[in-house]
Length: 104
Ligand SMILES: [Zn+2]
Image (cartoon, rainbow, N blue to C red; front, side, top):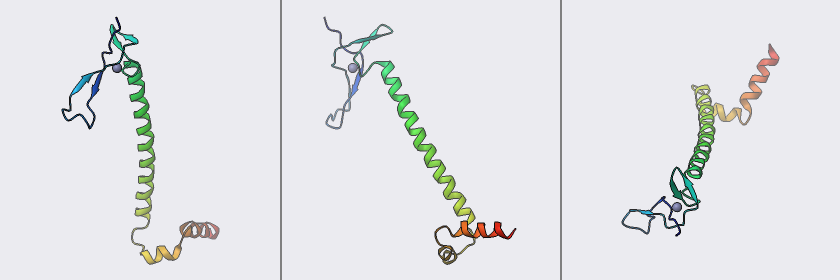
């Protein structure tokens, strides 16, 4: 007798019922008395979830770094007209700061 997987499959967009179905695969792994296929193996599911969370965290950290940078730029540029910023041009602020350092 082949054991069936204990896992559940969520209906996709073609399944209008939106129901949850039992997995149809043969079970290959036993975990805590229940049988699962390779996909629904709780150990694999957990590892996959953690991998995804880590990926999102990396993405979120990058996004937050960019947001902090933009906020600092915004605060620094307050009170300075767009024309003045355009006159400074690329790297203009750095050149200005370097020139100030040399004067000291
Ligand atoms: Zn399964």
